[in-house]
Amino acid sequence: MKKVALFIAVAGVVSLAACTKCKVCTKESSPEVRLCEKDYDSSSEYGLAVDATEAAGYTCKESI
Image (cartoon, rainbow, N blue to C red; front, side, top):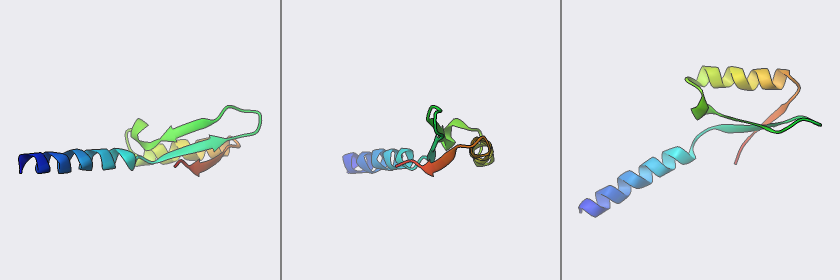
């Protein structure tokens, strides 16, 4: 029973890590920029970073 509980706990942590929001932003003749929500202190800060990148002429799309 303990092995089953451990497996469920590990699977839960792995699935949460896989749900990290990231965007890949591209602009012609510029390097690709990858923005991930986990790299910011809040979702608002992440959103501001995406907005600023798009304002700089990049096109951002959800990363798979």
